[in-house]
Image (cartoon, rainbow, N blue to C red):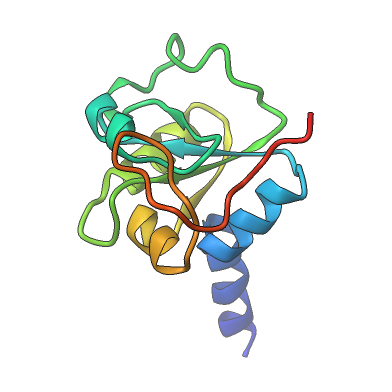
Length: 130
């Protein structure tokens, strides 16, 4: 039983689902959605408030401006893409607190949340009150 408990605790420590991310963003928690795809994918469609750092470009220089006191939630297109996993690994190696978004952008939209970009979809919006 202890091994099972550890397994599920580890999953929650390293992954986040779209609903939890949406709630955390709406509550203004110290969390940032991080699109790990190439810029053209981000420009077409991304999670509102997300920043874009392609996993292939993550290093000490490209991440030096990032706040180390927040949780970064990496994502890509969806379960058929592993850019979010590569991005999470890179960010963890660089010393950031990171989670991977389960299902990526595809499951984000499946759950009914809005996106931004040239091919944005309507859904529940995330608005910043700052």
